[in-house]
Image (cartoon, rainbow, N blue to C red; front, side, top):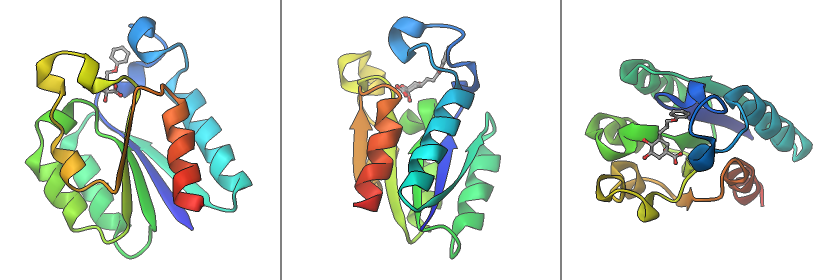
Length: 140
Ligand code: CA2
């Protein structure tokens, strides 16, 4: 099982600002913990964070035929990007959408996610544990 962990714009700032919303863990912590969790369950996991929408779309295209499942926190692109939705629609494996915060308890503009129309599962509000829960769900 090959898993791809994708994190979208500004998530490189995790642990540095807004810990009340996003927690104290850095993205490096989350990537390392999620990778170890996947490997303990017999899966390989590679991770990418990018602030560039085209780079994320290119990575999703490259995942076609080589990656079994994508765990993605699309961050603000969740609420804006039909292009990211289209890229994920061209990916044949499973997709799990993760949000650190409960987007439904926040501003109205965060309540809708274009990505949820493609996601096989959506996790929101569990903090960094959501990434581990995504691995567990994919590996069960
Ligand atoms: O709750 C989530 O995981 C979000 O995907 C995070 C996005 C937000 O736009 C979504 O509505 C919900 C924002 C990520 C920004 O991350 C920061 C981390 C630290 C400091 C500033 C921003």
